[in-house]
Length: 399
Image 1: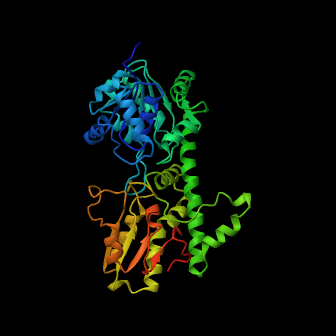
Image 2 (image 1 turned 135 degrees about the vertical axis):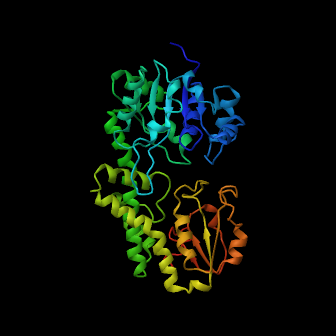
Image 3 (image 1 turned 60 degrees about the vertical axis):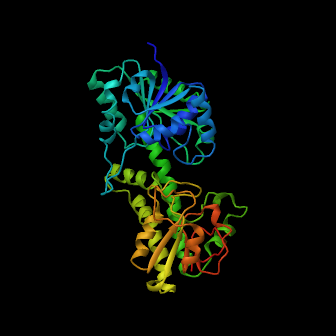
């Protein structure tokens, strides 16, 4: 059976799908992005990235101009590709419960275009058992498709290197499915790790949750030290110097973004809410903005102060505000300070029209908080107090 395209990436206009589509196209796999966002599709067809991803735009231009990559909002493009890659993940609702039916529901739009002989590869983080749900859904449709789960493992801003360097986990319910998934992602890397779908689902969740727990431990250490007037960064520098067993200790800061918190809560639900360590990590990481606001309130009368927040993206160098704890900090401070203003060099006014230029923020604010450690803030010159949990400016103890 012949197909017009090698791969279609469903939901491929976002931070996970588009770098993958570009990477596959750059390795000679004719690829099409299917996304419901007309804006994202228009950006792709114009060879413009809808978001910041270093190195991606030049590659996008190359693969679009060569005809190896195209994009559409028409779900019918799904039937044109041998490999259907789905980058829709399992969401967590307002009660922190995962919705395992979200992916099967989301696939309903393009499911009428599934064809015999295709490989359906789930890519984004999913709740354990969702791969089996999708397999059963496809089976009930009477379509002969191979089903695989091949979790993405990239970090934002490293996608265009990590897609080609990191080992790729592939899984499936049959040897044929595993072999096809290995061949598909083998176009990007020679290092393929084979697991069962259940093992692969947990491997992805364990990876993100492990990082979240490590950040929580350090953030707890930071609050302990800072509350006693001790410069945590000096402690960390001392204990890690030439000591290999401490080299993986990160610095403190907001542990946020669209994955770490959500995936930890998925594991909590999977364990019937007996994951005490995960819940404790959530309380620490989600509590850090409240700790910063409380410390400032103890040392300053915020009721007549304007507080300026430096950085609203969830990580340095990013324009992505999804699940950013900067916004939690902003909400908390609005109850305590006279005014709260914010700036970010990467987040556009279309995304957050309330942002002000950096110069204006420095001029108007009485107190500054480094919420996102963008490199643009390293050279700030001001005599105003700055709270800097990241120690971007080397100030040590939080004011």
